[in-house]
Amino acid sequence: MSISNLYTMVYKLRERPFTLLPDPDFLFWTPKHLNAYTALQYGVQSRSPITVITGDVGVGKTTLLQALLREMSESATIGLISNAQGGRGELLRWTLNAFSVDVPAGADYVGLFQTLQNFLLKEYAEGRHVILVIDEAQNLSVEALEELRMLTNINSNKDELLQLVLVGQPELREMVERPNLSQFAQRVGASFHLTGLDAEGTTAYIHHRLRHAGGTGEEIPADAIELIHEAAEGIPRLVNKICDLAMVYGSTRTPPGVSADVVRGILVDGLFIRTRKAVDPNSADQGVQA
Image 1 (cartoon, rainbow, N blue to C red):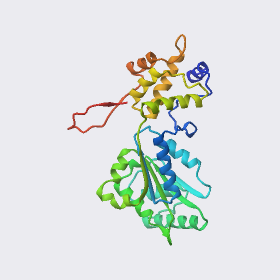
Image 2: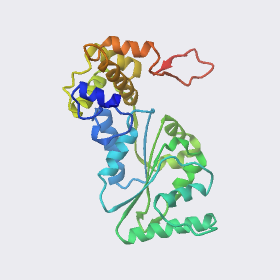
Image 3: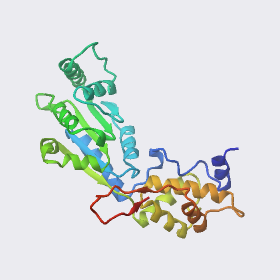
Image 4: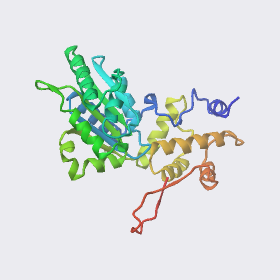
């Protein structure tokens, strides 16, 4: 029997409540997540040319995105790019591939652009709404963002044929705010920056996931949650990581159970890896981020 199955049996859970994979079924609607989701919905429903959602690694951006895609109307044609890179022309190829559009052999930039335009016009004629979603969009270059802006200029009469939804880390927002991307920023109709949970939010988040998995919500006590929140700095993915480890190690105790001592042991013994903040070398701030 695997350790994960063992600990779900010990705590009488249907499934592991703290996996690291994004799962919309476990989505916890904090006010911040609800506002971010509202911004996503508004951007899509208002046919905003560009919608931008940013946040630190692990705050739940991809989970929100998956929840949105799951609820999209059948009249929408959605293309998803998870990690686009490359120079001029490569982004067009990524885009066509996301929509499963065949690219003519040996096509140059003009040919690729025409192929995309023909596809968008066809979808529009059939009454379909085309949305290109780019996750991890902070990896795009300034030139790529400008190329995306140009794609949103493809229109039919007063109707724009392509909407963009960009999801990425804080660096994406910093790029969009640069003076040389002012035209791009002017096309952004909806945006939101998602941050980590406060102490109260972390407590509610942990209780929610435990109950969703079939538990009481009290399997992890308050003093242990306080340590978890401090170590994870409210980042849901890191909260999941510590909670999962705590439940595994707590299940082997006699009697079994999670406690502040179990969590403290995980942190002291290096079972949870902390990552250092990227800091300005001229700054005196040399803090550590969980």
